[in-house]
Length: 190
Image 1 (tube, rainbow, N blue to C red):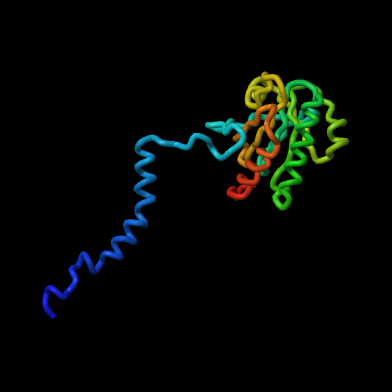
Image 2 (spheres, rainbow, N blue to C red):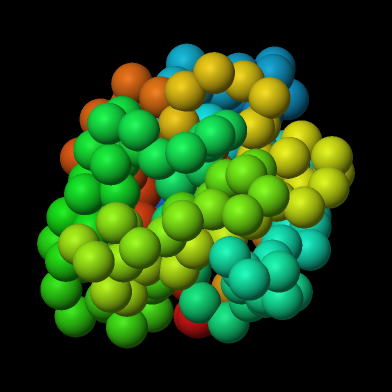
C-alpha cells in the first residue's frame, strides 16, 4: 500500500475529535458567559431569597418557654399584632400548601409568629390543631421576621434553623408551593 492510500492521522481521528469538541462546547460556552458576567434575569424561586440567610433567633411559645424550629422545614406566618383577617388567610393558605405537598407533609410544619406579649392562639388552634404559636420576645427576633413592617408575611425556615425565604404580603400561595416542592425535592435535610 502506498502512502497516498493510507489516511492521515488527522483524518483517521476526525470523528473522535468531533465528538470531543461537541462534548466540550457547552463547557466553553458556560465559561465564556461566566467570564463576561452574564446571569439570568430572573431566578427560579418565587419568594425573596435572603442572602445571607438570617440566623433564627430565640423564639418562645405562647406561654413564654423557648422553642426551637430546627429539624423540619417550617412555614412561618409572621406579622405584628393579633391575627386579623389577612393573617387568617395566610394561615389557611399555609395549610393548603402543606396539604398539597402530599407525601412530603411530614417534613414540613407550620407556625404563626407574633410580637404580642401574651398571644391568644385558641381561635387559630381551634381551626388548625397542628399550628404552632410562636412569639418574638426581643427586638432581634422581631427584626429577623420583619415584624416592624405592616402586613403579614410567610417565611421559610430550613431544618438547620436559618430563615432562607421571604414572601411579600400579596404573594401567590402557588409560588410558595412551587418553591417548597423544589426545596423538598433537592434537600436531604428535614
